[in-house]
Length: 260
Image (cartoon, rainbow, N blue to C red):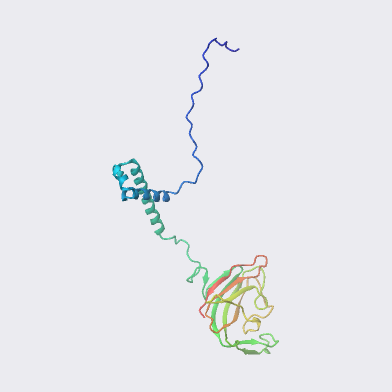
């Protein structure tokens, strides 16, 4: 039941307006403290160093006594302290917790006599040298048959042979025909970053595995790679990669440092 309204009653007072908090207008993100400090330093230098006209300066009292100056000076002190801390941090030595994985000068680069693994291939370069002549079995007789003959072979004019002896362990999932297939991608590299391929028919080289002699997973064998390069080439490295897995070919070569 509603209350009766008294006649001539004064209308209710309107609600007092409440103070509102204005939202800041959208604008650029606040500058970092570093740039704020730069601005503060510029203002302080103007106030103290005569950047304001002489007439204005004469009309001003001592600026160092003003609240604005004190605030700017405090900002400048904070900025200088932060800058000093940042400089100390940048001068601190980097962490050395991660040790190189190779005994060579460059991490990840092997040296002669050190096993290097690339996916399913573990390869050790046991020697590398320049030779004047290589011996190739140009007959159809298999090595060890007693009927094979090795023919001395010279490099082309202006070239030289570089021989790289290796020992290979097959840790892949399939067998490897080291001489008549291409289970291990490889290249010889000189100081001009040129990459050289091996000569053809490595199975003819004395001491190499025969053609179709499959190195099964878990087994190991010696393998010699021969390259013909320009006579003035300065050989600096041997690179190789596991090429047995066609579904996941390695795009990264492993390297061994040479000085030939």
